[in-house]
Each structure stands twice: as C-alpha cells, then as structure tokens.
Amino acid sequence: MKLLEGKSAIVTGASRGIGRAIALEYARQGASVVLNASRASDALAGTAAAIRDLGASCETVPGSVTEEATARALVEKAVEAFGKLDVLINNAGIVRDKPLAMMSEKEFDEVLAVNLRGVYQCSRAAVREMMKQRHGRIVSISSVAALAGRPGQCNYTAAKAGIVGFTKSLAREVGKFNVLANALFVGVVETEMTRRMPPAAKKELRQVIPLQRVGRPEEVAGPCVFLGSDLSTYVTGTTINVSGGSYV
Ligand SMILES: NC(=O)c1ccc[n+]([C@@H]2O[C@H](COP(=O)([O-])OP(=O)(O)OC[C@H]3O[C@@H](n4cnc5c(N)ncnc54)[C@H](OP(=O)(O)O)[C@@H]3O)[C@@H](O)[C@H]2O)c1
Image (tube, rainbow, N blue to C red; front, side, top):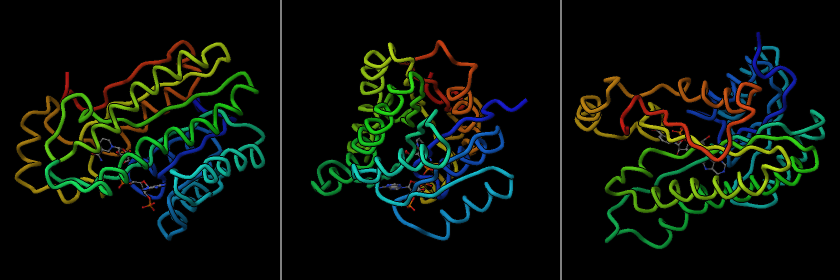
C-alpha cells in the first residue's frame, strides 16, 4: 500500500541530503513532487531524474525560499502541474556557525532568512491555497539544537526554535480549514551540512546518542510521510523528535 497515492507535495531544499531523501520517499509512496533548491544545479536535476526513474511525476522550481516570488511559484507549479497542493515540506536550511562574540550581522541574518523567513514565505503561500481547498499539511524541519542549544549556533538555534512557535500558532489559525501544521526535531544526520564536523566530535556524539549512531537522511523521510499521510489526520501543532533519542 502506498501511503501518499495521488497526493501533491512541495519539498524545499531537495537537491541533496534530507530534502532529497524526503522527496524520493514521497515519490515511492505515490506522491507527485515539486522540488526546490536555491538555484538550478546538477544536484537538483539529479533528484528530479531519480524521481522520474521511480515512475513518479515531478517538477523543479529553483529559487531562494527567502523570496516571496519563489514561494508563490512553488505553489503555482504544484496546482498547475498536479491540480492541488496537499503537503508542503519546509526543509531548506543553512548554517553559518561561529561563537556569538564573533558572529556578524550578515551571518545572523542569513541563517534567520533561510531557516525561518523561508518557512514563513512558503507556508504563507501554501496555506492560502490549502485554506481554499479545505485541506493541507505543513511539515517544517526544526532541530534538537533548538531544544538543547549548541555552542556556535545562536543564529541557527534561534531560527529553529522560531519554527516551533510558528508551527503552533499556525496550527491554531488554520485548523478550522483542515490544514495541519507540525514540525520535526531532527538530531544529527549524515549530510553535507554535518560533513565538516570533526571525527572526534562525531565519536563523542555517538556515545551520548541512545541509538549509538548519527541518523541517515532516509530516517527523517519516514516521519514526514506519516505527517503528510491519512495516518495523521488528528495530529497538529506538535513536534516529533527524530534524533535517535539524543534529546529526551
Ligand atoms: N543534517 C543534520 O544533522 C540536521 C539536523 C537537524 C536539522 N537539520 C535540518 O534539515 C534540513 C536539511 O538539512 P541537510 O542536512 O539535508 O542540509 P544540506 O545537505 O546542506 O542541504 C540543504 C538543502 O537546502 C537547500 N538550500 C539552501 N539554501 C536555500 C535557499 N535559500 N532556498 C532554497 N533552498 C536552499 C540546498 O540546496 P542548494 O545549496 O542547491 O540551494 C540543499 O538542497 C535543514 O533545515 C537543516 O537545518 C539537519
């Protein structure tokens, strides 16, 4: 049984890492997908090709999620190509790690812009369509770093904690339209974003994670499928911790 048969979804930041894994799993589960990344690239085209190889439909809309024009274009493409928009996955994210004393305004603003304003832009464009349809799901990728804090990440954790309040308020606002909003607290996952973490830090980390390992991108995709599917029709305004137990 495919859990997302006939559904239409947008995945931001889908050129690699967690976004790519979510988009591929959505396709496997029967969804048609609109893929986004900040620019047209071989990586984005690669995700699209992998989805078409699975026999699923997909479109690409490059552009920064910080821009209203990108958010509008994503929703318009989903409606034009697939007739509706069932799920938005707010996944695009960046880091610019530095101790606060050395962090420039630019490094603070860039991280807030992509990780939090991007969620605002895409969610606003999506809910306008979803409220008309009287159904829809918004799933946003936060981080356990928002719960525990992490040195060097005052910008990132502020943005990821912001997603949680944003999601709760949105869930209260749009529940009456049968639009559901949830977020994931994701732990450390092996991607480009965490590639530069020193091996010693990764070893230390593994020792404090109850599952004794960092996560794989595909392991974030499963909960996203649940939150986009008909298995979660009464789940809104909440967060699922996908961290191997690293924050309990
Ligand atoms: N990896 C982890 O350990 C971890 C843990 C907790 C939460 N997360 C969160 O999970 C999400 C995905 O992370 P990841 O590890 O898969 O990172 P990643 O490998 O660096 O991928 C990030 C994706 O976001 C896209 N992106 C960056 N800026 C963008 C923008 N302005 N507009 C649109 N797309 C943009 C990138 O594509 P282009 O560069 O082509 O634009 C790429 O597709 C992020 O929100 C991250 O904060 C990750």
